[in-house]
Image (cartoon, rainbow over all chains, first blue to last red; front, side, top):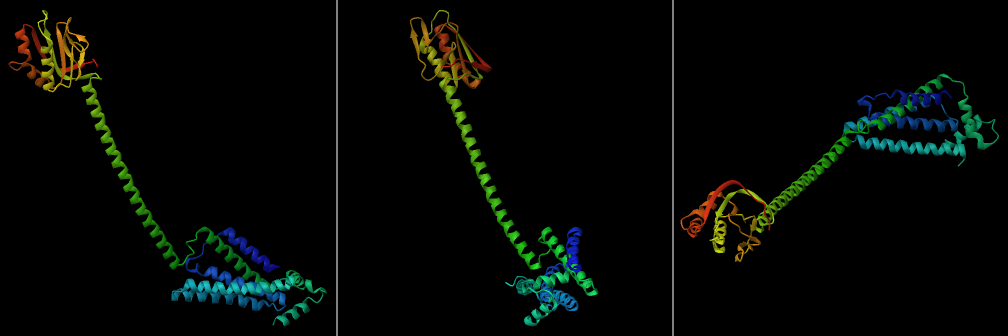
Amino acid sequence: MIAVLGLVVGIVLGLVLQPTIPAALQPYLPIAVVAALDAVFGASRALLDGIFNDRVFVISFIGNVLVAALVVFLGDQLGVGAQLSTGVVVVFSIRIFANAAAIRRHLFHA
Amino acid sequence: MTSSGSKDAEASASSSAQPRATGWAVIREALSRRPSRGQWIVALLLFGLGFGLATQVRTTQQDALSGARTSDLVRILDDLSAQRDRLAAEETQLQATISDLKTSADQSQVARDASKERLQNLRILAGVVPVTGPGVTVVIADPESLLEASDVLDAIQELRDAGAEAISVDGGRVVATTAVVDAPEGIAVGDTVLISPIEIKAIGVPGTLAAGLSFPGGVIESVREVGAEAIVVERDVVDIDAVE
């Protein structure tokens, strides 16, 4: 419950405060958000599978974000930042779809 | 892994008899769970996710360019440069069209002015408009009606030779088709019968007109020989109101 509240409060605060992202972080934020979304979907599926674990979630969340940021950073340094960003988004999107399918099977048996 | 997961889910939701409600029961149970330390950490992470999500959405809505990459910006700049060049070329073309149209309009104006001037000249020659300008007046006193039509015609021809643009005799306009004849009542110029003193008005260069009349053996002298009197006056303004 408190986790859902945290998500809602974060969205509301982000909309209300309208913070400015530092220019250095601008390429990473969207990727980080997608990576975190993947972690959240994975956690939801694990919850339904009955294998949810706080520690695993925290580590996968932070790990996802850091690895995604690292990949984009490397891509930028190598001059293929745009392509790698697209790749990261594609991979996470596929995982999110897969997790969403598993969640759907759990909740609707369909 | 999936099979063991579902087994665990069933184990944790063993109170639910219906397999259909299993997933929902797990969610209900998770939502009503008492906040532990791990839950707080999860809440904190989700708070960060929500915050980042909302921020990113706002940034994207506010300014699409600020989030764009260098390569994208370069491409956008190239596109805009190409567009600007295209528009500049179009502007040049349109400017050329404007100047073309202006030139042709000017030419039409010049042609129109020339036609107007020609029309005015022709009207003066045809005697259908009043004329005002420098010229001469000739007054011929002939109380005994000694002059003949040919003398008046000579005077008119001399004035024409001297470049008179418009001539009137006793208030009647003289044009190309005006007849000068000896009538029973006297000399008739067009419809006008001349009565002494005869007043001839002519518009042209005053000096030239006067010289054309006054040279030795000219109109003035022949009029005097007949016995009449002629006076030529050069004027700056002569009005010929009579029209044909």
